[in-house]
Length: 192
Image (cartoon, rainbow, N blue to C red; front, side, top):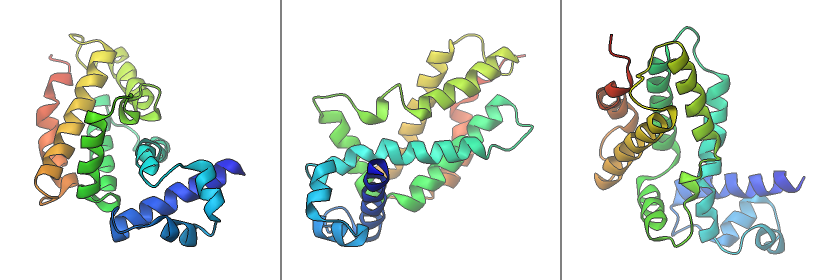
């Protein structure tokens, strides 16, 4: 039950952040939309800013959903490109570029670790699983360890999102990724 309330607050907050903008969304808006009391909100979060750290949870829920809906018959490289496209489509549709910019910059100057870079996230475990399978089948390069491939992939994804943010969301993140990411990641393919 407690996890359900926390998730409801998170989901409601991110919907409002996307709809109204982070700065324009108040705690009272979140409380009203979530149908909770102010005390309940403060039980789970110290402030509206604390909700920003939940982006990794939002994204991991999407990665879990995608993992259950993987197209069959794809090799590891194609699966990774599919995953990148789907994730970037989700970000484009659900997270405003201004908020994403703020989140990235906050993660850079933060004294504590970044929740987005937490290696225990579903995201990193999912990438490792795909890459281990691809390595085992000889579909991915043997010149990098699985850990190095995961880091290379995640750096590339963040680079595209950063470019999207720096261009004020001025291009279609999913389509741009679909075109550019395979070129960026060609080093992951096994050279015959």
